[in-house]
Image (cartoon, rainbow, N blue to C red; front, side):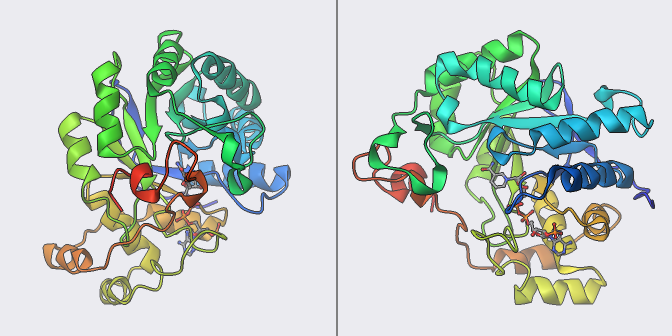
Length: 323
Ligand SMILES: NC(=O)c1ccc[n+]([C@@H]2O[C@H](COP(=O)([O-])OP(=O)(O)OC[C@H]3O[C@@H](n4cnc5c(N)ncnc54)[C@H](OP(=O)(O)O)[C@@H]3O)[C@@H](O)[C@H]2O)c1
C-alpha cells in the first residue's frame, strides 16, 4: 500500500510527551464488524497514521488492540512506543473510585500496559447503565470535577497513562480545574471545524499551555448527529477549487493553522490518505480571513445532558454561555 511520504508533525504536550497532530478517529455509527475495524486500523498504520483516538463508549478499543498486536506481529511497527493511543473515561465512570477500574478495563480491551492519553470524555456524570441518547432525568448526576481529576492524576502517577486531559470542557470549567490540579490537563478535545472555530477556547488554552484537539473536523459528515454544512460550505469549496485541494483537506488544514490538532475519522484508504496530505502547502492570510467570515454554530449542543432537574439546566449552563 502506498504510504503518505511526509511525516505527520508532532507537538510536545505539557506532560513532555509528543503527540502526532493528526489522529485517526475511531468512532463509527453504525459500528462495523470487528474484522472491518481491524482492517481499517491496519490500513491506517500502513498509510502512516500513528495516533488513534478511541473511547470506552465507542466499542472500538478491542479491535484497535487486535490491530496493534497484528501490526507488531507483521512488523508494520517495531514497538508499541511508535504509536500514540488515546482513550476516554465514559460518564458512567466519572467518579473518583471508578476511574482506575475503568482505565484498567480500557487497557485490558486494548491489550496495552499504558495509554498515551486518557481524557475525561464529558464534564458529566451519568448513573451506571444510563444510555446517552435516552437519558431519564434522574440519570444525570452532579459532576465531581475534583474527585474525578484527582483519580486521573493517580492513573498518571501509576504510569498507566502518559498524559491526562479533558474533552468538551469550557474555559470556565478548565479554570476551575486548574485551581485544584496538581497535573494540568495536556489536551482538551472539543468539537472544532470551520463552522465552529472555538475562538474563545483556542487562545485561552494556548495561554494555559493546554493543547486543543478538534473532533468533528469535517462536521461528522455522514453521521446521524452530523452536518453537511462543513463539506458543502461555499467559501471552503471555492478555496479548495482555487488551490487544487479537496474540501476536507482545506477544512483540516484550517484547523491545523488555527493551532489545534485534528482527530478525523475515515475507514476508507483513499480518504485516510487524502486527510494526511495537508502539510506541504498552506492557506494564505487572505484565505484564513475569508474562513473567519463563516457563521459560527456548534454542531452538537449536548442537549442530551441538559434537564430542568439535572446539574445542567440549560445548554448555556453546559457550555458556560459559549454557544
Ligand atoms: N470527544 C468527543 O466528545 C468526541 C465526539 C465525537 C467524535 N470524537 C472523535 O473525533 C473523531 C472524528 O469525528 P467524527 O467521526 O464525528 O467526524 P469527522 O471526522 O468530522 O467526519 C467523519 C465522516 O467524514 C467522512 N470523511 C472523512 N474523510 C473524508 C474525506 N476526505 N472526504 C469525504 N468524506 C470524508 C467519513 O466517512 P468515511 O469513513 O467513509 O471516509 C465519516 O463519515 C471520532 O471518530 C472520534 O474519535 C470525539
